[in-house]
Structures are given as C-alpha cells and as structure tokens.
Length: 585
Image (cartoon, rainbow, N blue to C red; front, side):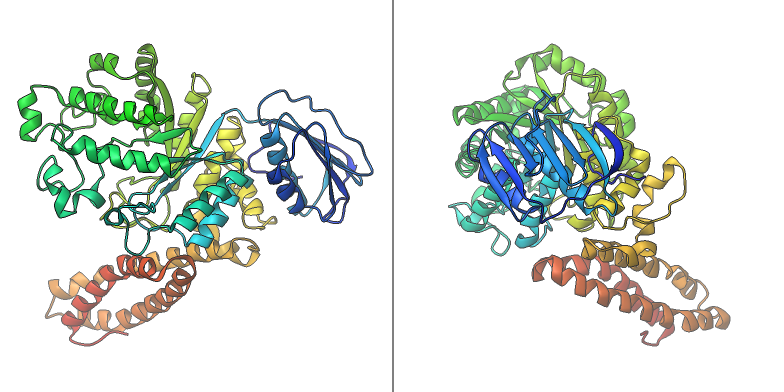
C-alpha cells in the first residue's frame, strides 16, 4: 500500500485493520499553556475540539491521552486505529507537525491503521522567497506560507529588494511594494504556522533598486555597474546601515538578518579600493564586519553569502578554492551561507570550504537551489535533474557534517533586470522535494513523484514507469495526468500550458531556409503551408497562458511575464512574414 506523506516520516508501522476517523470525530487538545496556533490547526481538521491544560497531546474522546516517546525537538507520535486517534508531541511545533501529518493521512484515499514516530533531522528547514522580480499575488503568497507549514518547513528567507514597506518611498516599488498592513499580515501568517522569517537586506551588491537613483549613483564601485556599491566610498556604509536598521525594525521577532553581500563583481576597481592597497577579499571582509557589528547591535545574528569571503576570482572564476588566510579576520558571530548549486561542486568544493571555515570558528549554513540559472535563462520550470541532484548532494554531506539546517534558495531570474524564470508555482515540486530531504535525510526519493502527485495534486492513482529516473519526469508528465488532478489545479495547468507553449514555439525552426533559399519555390511553399497552422496553435496556447497569468499575478507582472515568453515568437513571426510576404495567423 502506498503511503502519501511529505515529508516521509522517520518511522511508520502499518497495523492490523483500518482507521475510521473524520472531521466529525470529537477530540481533546491539551497544551501546557494556551496556544491559538494549535487550536487553529486542530480546528481545520475536526469540528469539535475541546481544549484542556496538559502535555502536548491531541486525542479522540473515545481514547486517552498518550505519552510521547520522542524526546527530540519537533518530534511526535501519531497512532490511528479504528475510531481512535492519538497524537503526542515533544513540544508545540511537534504537535503542530503531527497535525499536518494527520491532515495528509485523512486526505489519502485509504486509511490503514498505523503508528508513526517522527522528528526532523535538521533544525532549520528554510524555503526562499525572491521578490526582486515576479512573485505571487498577495492572497496566494499567504496561502503559500500556510502551504510551507504543511510540508514542515519552518523558516522562510525573504529577499524583499524594493518590496518592503519602507518609510523612504524612493526605495519602494511604486506598484509592487507591500503595504504596512500586508507586511504585518505576512509576518503574522508565518508566526501562526511556526515559520521564522529571515529578511535579506543586500548591503553592497545587488543594490540596483537603490543605486539607480541619481542621489546614490555616486556610490557605485564603477559608474557602469548599477548594482554594486564601493564599500570604501564615503556614504556607502551609512546607506547600508540605514537600510539594515529599518529592515531590523520591520522584523522585530526575527533572530537573523541576512546581509547578502554576494556577487560584487566589480569590487576593487574603484579609485578608493585601488588606493587602499588591500586585496578584494580584505576589503570585503572589513566591510562585512562593519555591517555585522551593526546587525549585532540590533540584537540579531548576521548571515552573509560565502563567495565574497574567499578572496574570489581566480582565473576569472568564483574561487571557492582561493586564499583563505584572511578568513581569520571574519567576525565569528557571522553565519556564512554556502551557496553551491552544482552537485559536483558540493561534492568537491564544499567539504574543504566548510572544514576551513569551521577551523576558523565560523558557523556555516548550507544552501542548495530548488531553482537556479543552470545556464538556462529562459526556463519555464526548474532544470529538475540538476536541482534534485543538488539537494541530494547537500543532504548527503550534511549527514556527515556539523550543520543543522539548509536554505533551499529559489531564484526568480539571474538579476533584477534579467529575463524572468518560470512562475513561482512551478518550483513547488523541487521545493517540497527539498523539504522532504531536510526533514528525513534518508527519505525514499525514488518514490517522491508518486507521493507528490498524491499529496500536492490529489492524484493518488497514477501509473509510473519503474526506475529512479522517474522522479525527474514531473513536468513532462503533467499533461498526461491533468485529468486526475484535484488539488492545485492552476499550478498543474500552468505547467501543462508552458510545456505546450515551449513545443509550439520550437517548431518554427525552418524559417531560416526561406532566407537561405529565397528563389526555391518548394522551400517557400513548405513554409507557407506549415507556418499558419503552427502560429494558430501557438496563439491558442498563448491565450490560455494569459488567462492563467491573470489569476496568478498582478496585471503588471502578468504582462511582463507574457511579453518575456511571446516577444521572441513575435519577432520570429514578423521575420517569417517578411520572407513570405504574407501575414500569418
């Protein structure tokens, strides 16, 4: 019998018989102190919830309060048999996560009697929200935060860029910035679902939204580098410090504040940096230390990306194999987030890098990518095989290391003004694969596709080919299984439409022949016969895409994404019309 749980529990034993519980089952919810988050979670499953004071338990009134044998943080015991349900947890998050498992259990088509002993192997299990480009409508954003909790993710790093409701409106996007009320509701929704928010405030790289303004352009490392600030120029630290202070103020409950500090490609080329006589690594470390002191003074722990700390740029490449002598200068309160998105680089580079940082007394935080560039700027969904292998490589290394968390980064484009990747919704497969592995480092990844289709899409009865490669086929198979989807239908339709749009656009490969053989009647006749049909099909698919985008994005974002996908096709079509001297459908 298939058990459709994400994450996969640590221990799951099927018992004799089945369970007969449902929304009408009266239950008792016990807590040492009142916690509305647990009351809300229990109320979503059961109509009749009676609360009492006591150890963290939830049980049907026809049974009794169980003891919890799991003594690990966020751990729980769940027993379902006949008309009885018993859930006991080590702490409040554990009871909350046990309720999420029970929720998935009740959604399954079959309900065998079972006992589950479960706990997470990583303390921090973090998703990532990149708001530099396209991101979901606000109401969908709140649903996504709730959804994270169902898959037992407990941290969310948010790179707001100009979407944070700042007091200085020049740093706020005129259309897409959150309102103060929306931001407060976003943080409350995260708190209500046991999710810690880590704000990311870029501090001297990726600052296009600030350095594009006339009053700050003089702070650029190079005039032609709109996103990179010279750390040695007068006024640079003051700008960064003011942004950090407001970000911290807007996140009073966040334990961490991520400073970014990555990919400052032009660092060291300004007159001030050249005159200092210092290496690029030394300049970066000294500036990062100043920023970290500011964060620490605000009562938070600073996080920075790793690449600028390793005296990078060796032979033009990012040099994780660079000179580490200057690492001794780093403030030891900084947590270094190591972002390595190739499985091979995780296997080859990460162990030595982590060992070196740990030897200097520096804590590290591994970061995989559930969506990254993968040398594919026009990707409608993550390059899935590379992404899953990246998650696997990190989890295998984490199992042998001193790290107790992982951030699953998710990028919306290569840079702020770049071509957008696929919509956020299309990364849920890779995101929850990472959630699966972060909770249970030994989860059965070969069966993840079946589990995901059941839990996320409600498609429990699908037939897949055997073999480990099947976990990579989600995006290819969606059109085939679309009729079986009962949950998250918009996501399923979006994947199907984007897959068909890709194919419809790719069949225009032969237009070049019209230019190459302009006097060949047979070549031109072939194009005249095929092209109208191909473009008619493409335009039908694009109409479907427009309809979906209107539900998922704001009008401005929907138009931007649609143009990013249709603009190249229109250019191609106009050129083909010139060759054929006839309009195409």
